[in-house]
Length: 193
View 1 (spheres, rainbow, N blue to C red):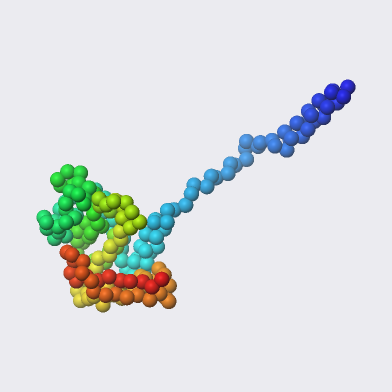
View 2 (view 1 turned 30 degrees about the vertical axis):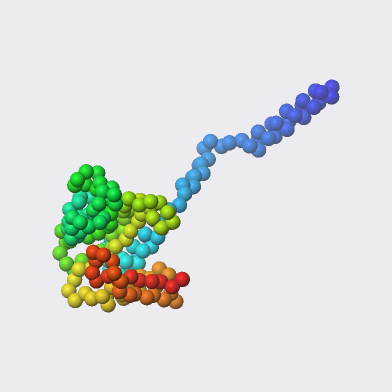
């Protein structure tokens, strides 16, 4: 009798649990969380927004590029160090993974007459040992302005505007001449922490 009562209580508990846990198959399901954007994607979008607010348009190009667009059209002659097979991912003698987004500038200048005001973000590839500051694949963003009466003062003002929109008005900048082989004039910008 005791066992029968225990079994009866167990069945009643099970029925109560089923009533509480019943599933309404007509009820809409929960939408699964699909994740978020990668920090690099967020950063590129933010930088691109700042450039667009200054009148630049976004210009993108292929990551698999011709030697002509990647080197020749940019006046990187046959002895340029980046052309070496140990520095660049060649697919064959005429095709490679782009080493900079400058090839997008070439493509834009072939299609469009000045004035040109573009920014070209994207992945680039170079044969590098992986360490804290190097990777065989990384992201780069370049700007290009082609117009009459453009000076280094325009570059400096644009860079300072971009830095202030990204990091705040209290950030200090320093732009100074520097030597970078194969570019002239050359300058670098430093941003306070």
